[in-house]
Length: 76
Image 1 (cartoon, rainbow, N blue to C red):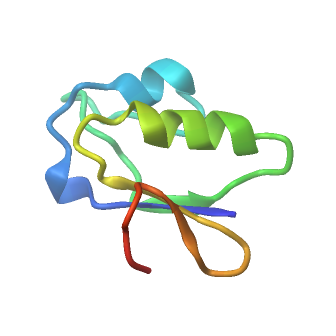
Image 2 (image 1 turned 180 degrees about the vertical axis):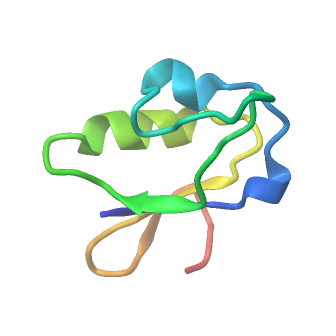
């Protein structure tokens, strides 16, 4: 599983980091500080919860088969 982030859409709510500061680090101004990552084994639930916590829906969950499972109706 991979996480892809459209950083330009981040408004600094930091809800993703509230779920997991390790997976979703913030910069000094409180905005997401990564464009994405491969989800470490055992961290899938936290990665999905962090993506779902984002009110702007700029965090995309890409499954191993290439499909996007979050946000709904997103395209790869």
